Amino acid sequence: MKTHEAPDSRGALTAIALKVLSVAIFVCMSSLIKAAGTLPAGQIVFFRSFFAIFPILLFLGVKRELGTAFATKRPMGHVARGVIGVCSMALTFFALTRLPLPDAITLNYAQPLLVVVFSSLFLGETIRIYRWSAVVVGLVGVVIIAWPELTLLSSGTAMAEEEVMGVIAALASACTSAVAAILVRNLVHSERTATIVLWFSLMASVLSLLSIPFGWEALSPQQYGALIAAGFCGGLGQILMTSAYRHAEVSVVAPFEYTSMILAIVVGYFAFGDVPTPYMLVGGLIVVGAGMFIIWRERQLGLSRGAARRVVSPQG
Image 1 (cartoon, rainbow, N blue to C red):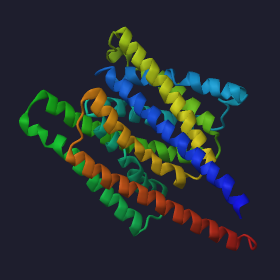
Image 2 (image 1 turned 180 degrees about the horizontal axis):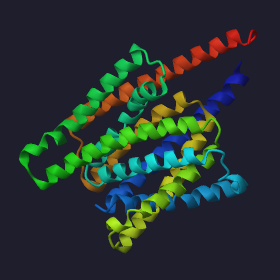
Image 3 (image 1 turned 90 degrees about the vertical axis):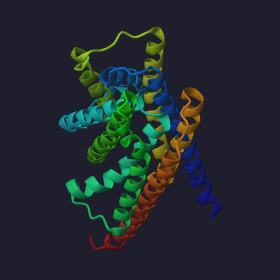
Image 4 (image 1 turned 60 degrees about the vertical axis):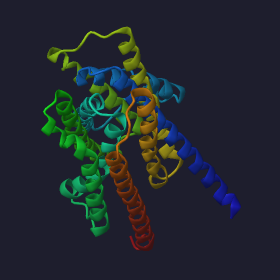
């Protein structure tokens, strides 16, 4: 028995370590983008996407998979995913530059909740009372996090309006990111992960250039450095995250995404002086709890479907 459990345990520990490391790198990426200042979202998207390509290409070159990395049978699927993904990325970066780091990251936790909603609406998936209840509870948590910013309008200050726009952008980003996740879920049936990642990075780089006429800003050397480093962090984080999911099931790895809330609080406090509010902490814990319940429920349903397939397979 021990000989069978040890490899699984090592694989799970490796997956968790890779996931936590990827989360830390993505928080570093977000911090670098925030440190660059309130730049146009399209300009940030370009640096984040274009410079992410290099570590990914290097990784594929080491694995000798570079020659077929861009080969695809579904180019229009990648285009649709690219357009939606770029919109989500731009909204995320807009929110990052206008909200405290912990708030901006925590509001994105609404994405897995919205995936459940959109899967029911657009894919016709059957969602039962347990997951609907988790979605409702999680969205209550989102409202708690957003409430202080949404009530700041009464003060009429410019900063208040920027924070409100940041909250709206973060929630819109969660919505578009949920749609992008559904498109990716559809692509993975026929496309390799490297192909999906490279197509998206290339699409995002090209599409972001369309925002140049709307005004890109001249950058200081420090801003160039921060944005280029953010791009490299994005590519490296993507590689580590993908590797994590190869070592263990999604239900084992996915909950560690929420370590980003702790890291965001620490980095936000020491780097930007962002002090987490009781609203953010209480709402964040509610959203995290709801998200982890959905992950657990997905695992239970996956086990049930697997058992059903094994029962019917001799007759099928």
